[in-house]
View: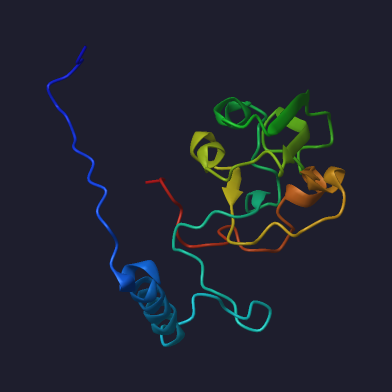
Length: 175
């Protein structure tokens, strides 16, 4: 019983002498190999030569400060909600008397952690932040030996005092 109208005739064609010893195939493979010797190398000598990053590269996160040195983050949690990898953990707290010089608003993030192993550096946290507090720099996340060292707290994320408010001039997806 035939299921379709199509049929393919298989021909058992005898191979020629040259095809049996695979000389044409070997020669064509060697030509491809030899052509790669004269092409530009794709690899670079990394520690000595560093490749330029793309204009829209997103690297290590920072939590920005305002001109008075106060943290911009108000612990609204929009960055944590927008994170598809669920890499951001925030615990909000109320500002106490005498802490006006540290925090802009009454509510601040007492715990702000980003798990860099889970982060996919998509930049959605930067887009979602209404206070422009989260920022992705051009800095690489350094290699570590322990997994717990990749969980960045406020000690590693908050922008150091006296540094520029905008570490890079281009802000992807922001107008």
